[in-house]
Image 1 (tube, helix red, strand yellow):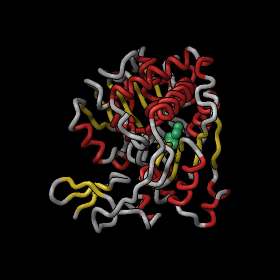
Image 2 (tube, helix red, strand yellow):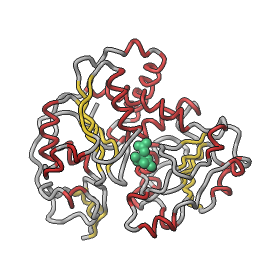
Image 3 (cartoon, protein in one colour):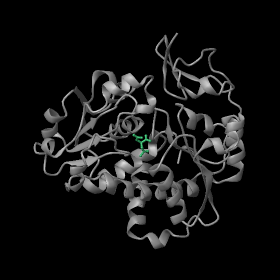
Length: 357
Ligand code: NCD
C-alpha cells in the first residue's frame, strides 16, 4: 500500500479498494475466521465531534477482530479541555496505540494528525470536508446491492455543500466507468467547486437539478443526506434550507423498481418513516456493511502499514489558508503547506481550500 494513513479514500488505489471490499465480504461470510486476527492491537477513537455509527462501528469492528479500543467521545473529558494541542494529543496517543480513528469539526484535521502520529491515522470525518470510511461503507453496500460500481445514475440529494459523505462518495465513484451524477439541492447548498472539477476531469458526467420528484425516474441510486445544521453560520440560514427535500412513498411511485436508497444517517426529516418499509430502502443494511468495511480496513492497515517516524514539515508558502474552518486557523503552529495550481492558485494541503494569490 502506498500510504500509511487514510485521510481520503484516494489514498487507496482502485485495486486496493477492491481488495478491501472483497475482504469485507469475506469477513461478513466467515466472521469466526477473523475473530482473533487483531489480538493484542489497540485502536484509539478520538472523537472531537458527536457520532453514533462511525464511532460505534469502529469500536465494534476492532472488538470483533479480537483487538481492544481506547479513546474519547467528548474532548471535554480529555486534556483538550485544558488547552492541549492536537499535535501533543496525537503524539501521545500515537505512542500508546496501533491505529487511530479521528473525527473533528475542522477541515484538514486528520491530515494534520497524520503528521505527528507514529500510528496510522484514519479520517473519521473532518468538518465539511471528507469522510472516507463512510464512502467505504457506501461502496461495500453498492457493490453488494447493485453488483458493480460503474454504469449507474446516482442521485445525491440535500446538503451537498457541507455533506462530507457526499464529497468523498463523488470522488470515489468518479473513478468507476460511466457513472452519472444527478446533484439535487438548492443553489445555496450545491457541491463545492473542487468536487465539480473532479467530476469534470473524470469519465463521469453530472447535472444539477432542483426537483427530487423530477429526477426520480432515472435514478439507480438515491443518496439522501441531512441538512448539516452544525455547519451553518446562523439558525435563520438553516431554517431556510430544512425540509426542502423529503423522500416519501408518493415520490417513490416514479422510481425504478431496483432503485437503492442510501443515507449515511442520522436522518432528521428528509426521509419519511414510511419509506423504511420499502424494499428499496437500504440505509439500515448499509450500517451493517459499514462495520464489515471498517473491519476490513483496520485489518488491511495493521497488516500492511508500518509505524511512522514523524518528520518535521516546513511552510511551503507564507500564506494563511482562507478557509476559516481549516484546522490551520485553530492550531496555529501547523506548517502552511500548499499545492500550486496554475499561476495564481494555491490549494491548501489540509482542507483542499482554494487560495488566490
Ligand atoms: C455522517 C457524518 O458524520 O458526516 N454521519 C455518519 O458518519 N454516518 C452524516 C451526517 O452527519 O449527516
